[in-house]
Amino acid sequence: MRVDIGNALASVASPGVSRDALDQLDETVARAHERIERGRADDEFGYASLNLPERTDAAAIEDAVEPLTDAEAILTVGIGGSALGAATVSQALGGLSADGENADAAPLYVLDNVDPARVREILAEVPLDRTAVNVVSRSGTTAETLSNFLVVREAMEAAGVDWTERTVVTTGEEGPLRELADRHDMPALDVPEGVPGRFSALSAVGLVPAAIQGHDIEGLIEGGRAGADSLAGSLFESPAYAYGAVSYALDQRGASITAMMPYEERLEYFAEWFAQLWAESLGKDGLGQTPARALGATDQHSQLQLYRAGPRDKMVTLVRARERADREIPETDIDGLAYLGGSSLGELLDAEFEATEASLAAAGRPNVRIELDRLDAESVGELLYGMEAACILAGELYDIETFNQPAVEWGKRAARGLLGGGDFEEADAVAEKTELLVK
Ligand SMILES: O=P(O)(O)OC[C@H]1O[C@H](O)[C@H](O)[C@@H](O)[C@@H]1O
Image (cartoon, rainbow, N blue to C red; front, side, top):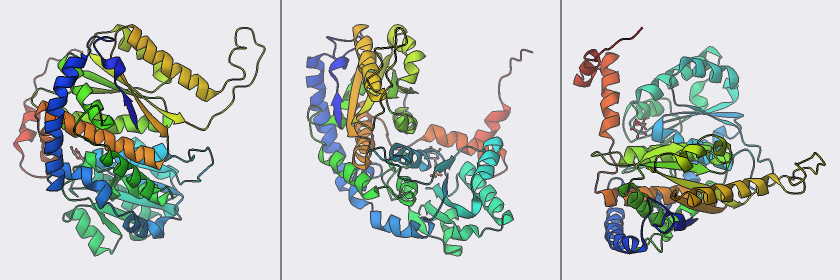
């Protein structure tokens, strides 16, 4: 993974970071790195996430899913960190391998929301008797996940399918899901200790669907290892830290919004995963950057106007793979279009990537380029690990608690109280809503 922060420099952009300021920040990065390394060495909550590449046992995951590898569809039932990692990994590796050959992967459906219309659609679409259900919840108590799972279970029973034969559970050591898995003797994998959901993509939480699909999960872990090896005590020597440090420095200078813009359809979920990582980890104490999601080249034709000419409160991250399977654009003699013929869709996408980058720089808008060799298991593993390390570093620089999410939990308690799941004072706040009704 390469990270180019040149277009975030004050000589190019405003807001921008001067070389001197970066040099000064680098001393803080060195101290933050020591803190992170200490946390890793002690397997401290959160910091332990960066040890996953050493801890995740690919063979154990493959063994657990072995009975389900005949699946024609996979249904992940989870939400937040218990869904987005899996969706990101499986979409990035896709049904098409990097060389364009069809890997014949079973499609992954993600049941995270509890929108009844979507649940009905998915249940009508998947062949229940040939679907692998991957239910994931660290706590084993999340209302959306457990409700969706109960609905799926009932649908399977109604279709005469033994759901215990078609389900693999990933959960914490204790809790209702663990008990259920034990009771029915279902394959069950562990959410690793000390790893919050949004940092767990490189564990069973993110890798089960990819393993069922036959993707190279050892390669993903290997990529994570490469990411770990590239952490160093200077932002100038570590792509992940360069990204985390420059994001922090730009935010301090007014870039309170960070737009993640991959130029790969297969990284669309990655932008969503990144949004959770960044928002839930860094949105504390009145601090944090607001993540925005964009997709190149599509959003050049919508959001780019704002990014280049709107308020100077954004940084844009452009992500691409340097090599990809390509497709020629047919020659044409249509007036004005002849220039397209003989080039390829990939060349067009690259030209658009570079044009967007240059157009932002020309307007003095900070942007960062992230490049992967190709969209394969190693690069994807390295990318996810790198963004997690970047986020943890940024948390150190902001001096906030990166690994909790009290604001999210407030809402969880309120919803639970409203549904009669206990006495929660947060639920009372719902009745206290201020109304100013306009009809
Ligand atoms: O894995 P679970 O316990 O079901 O939690 C799923 C999600 O729940 C909460 O909303 C947390 O804020 C997320 O970080 C977490 O990923």
